[in-house]
Image (cartoon, rainbow, N blue to C red):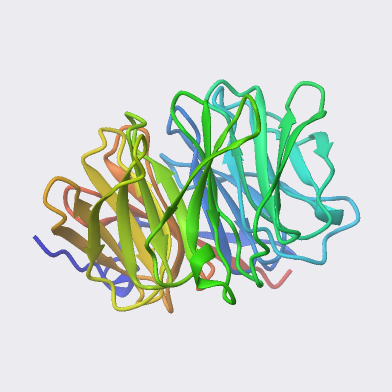
Length: 335
């Protein structure tokens, strides 16, 4: 089934579109989006450096979290802790900031990087935070103390971000280790979290790897690349299981469904695609962002997919029907 849900078809449906008037605030391109563990809240981060929390049921903005002295760089990552009480996002001065979801206060700043932070992820038990950076390293911190546990040396990314993802058991960290000048480094490296030692390098993409995600069982790893493909890998052996092709543009973001049967991918071709992982066949295509969606995530129950885009919008899609449940639109009021 191929579903195309153009944004304009739903924009006139009041139940499907939520327009927010925000006094004196002009939000920019939406880069990352993430669901809270219970699925009730969305977090987004944008080019204007604002971290926003949204109520999924109503589409209402709950709060904004911003730095007192502002920022000069965009925010490319946002992640909920496993208990849903905190959110991590890149901060000023190459740090990662930890925010209190309940009141929006800043709890802690994790320092150590010397370049722009690209991606951040919590370990499954919430005790560790990993972040990759333009400085070519990945740092693992103890969340409770802020102490650096490991610094992993990776290939410099030539202005491209390195995605990071913990395995479901928390013992392995996958890093999209990419280079525009060294094609052999367009790979995914697996690191042992306890020792900080590299386990293996998984290579096969022809261009920069943008995204990486573990399947729910921890046995399968997916990677998305500028070569327009998604590849599935066996974690234990590093063997390629399948190459998924169909996007006409670069793959920017990927996400597994909670049951591990479906993969969502966003691309510069302007579409969000859902793939059957048993067959590798395309299940659905959602079209609604202009020019394209930066990020994609499944809801914890697997019934919805959310995408954030350069068009300043966040779209919540119903997986079964392909229709738009909510469109979160940032509009500046004239007050």
